[in-house]
Length: 387
Image 1: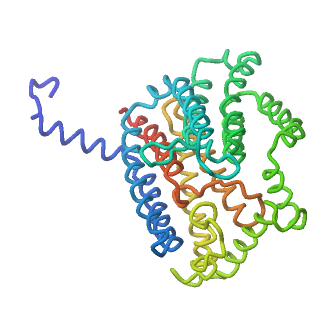
Image 2: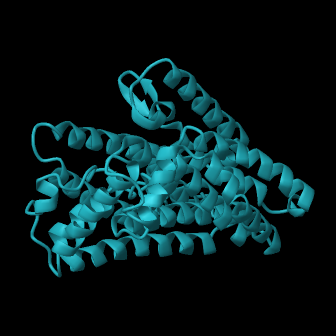
């Protein structure tokens, strides 16, 4: 010990450091993630009962293990080092999207150009656009870091906005309107919070609204039919994408309503078990949960997501620097919009755009992306204790 000439044994110092580290770990965040993963696996087992879909449950467990490893690695590496590499990471994500488009143009039979969204490596499908969400959050943190007031000048913001629009445009032409919309919402949400003046985000939002007619004309026919079907189920004929999406939404609403107050019971949901709700393990897992656990279970799940969002914002408020705060705001925005859009789809108050429910929906790329995002929050929380 200093001042006395005495030194503590190395074993004692090691134990002391371990205790400090254990005390600094964000256990509420980890426990909330574990709770959502447990609910997700229970829900997925119910949605995929039977030999035909059993592989989905096994695959989800494997992806959760990969995600947990990614969470640990991202927690350990200093987030400031990750932010310094943000533009490089975004460049890699853009390159992977271009590679997916090249690979997709040479094969695959997915509908509506969905082949262009995936890279297939060793039989595993990876969606590069999911990586863009995390990279975009890190890029925004670098843009709005401390001591960079010149970055808020109109010319500098316009240059960076143009660069940010590149990956969003690539996602939109895959075509993946849902993910492109989500990334745009993340950028706008962070900008409204991080930019000292409220006007630049307002101008960008107004420009986006004015460009809607142009975006509408550039949409694929099936995308237009989805939106028209959301507005009016009788807008198109029985074979159109509009009617198909009306069917999806109608069956989902039936499933949610049939759960009533306390639900039909685990594994007892008829809309789920008889496959009336299409894609109920990816796009509509909330309808499976609501049918089996009712209004009470639905409120419970929303309460867990609400606590997660509040906790992430609490970490943002206590972050040691502006970079950490912006990262947490970005992750909170990403989580909020995923939850909001997915549940809105299930309840029929938003068009079906294929947005997943965090930690609940089946899908490896989305799951690992959220583990990485939560790892960034855990990283910020850990560093405020001096690590």
